Image 1 (cartoon, one colour):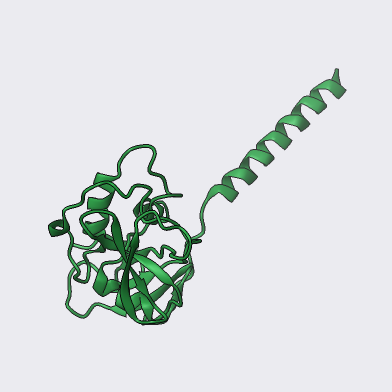
Image 2 (cartoon, helix red, strand yellow):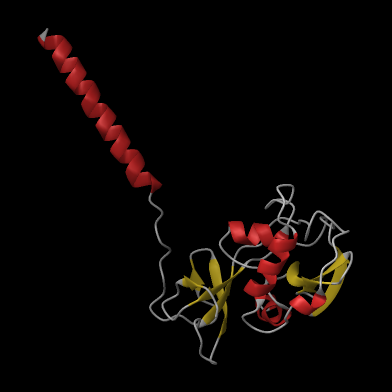
Length: 192
């Protein structure tokens, strides 16, 4: 009887210990931040690419890690109103929200839609002006958050330092690089 009680208590102690190990492992460690945040600094997987000196709710623009080549969207046929897009700094989020509203069905996933990929990573597709800042730290063609009305979307070619267009379904050579808006402490915030 004592042996059985001991084994039951020992088993419970192991179960509690294992559960506490999993609890500690599931907590995400926040990325270490440099003492002074400036252009070129790394914060976890992000690289600061520009400092916003115009004020507002965010201080720095950062880029994430590039995806493998992927589609801008898995449909060429959806009409998009180009008047809903802006090229300005801080507008990548608003442009991305519009793209996500047009491609909202379950067949559009983070594997075949650049805006959904960025959201899965906690970021946004860059606007044209934001893409120029990202390009200084990139060496690939990457999608931006703007497109033509019909079947093509814009990308920025960092090696040629120019914009180009490709079919939205092109998945051979263009990657997605999410952008993030950071406050003065290096925390991700929403632009206003």
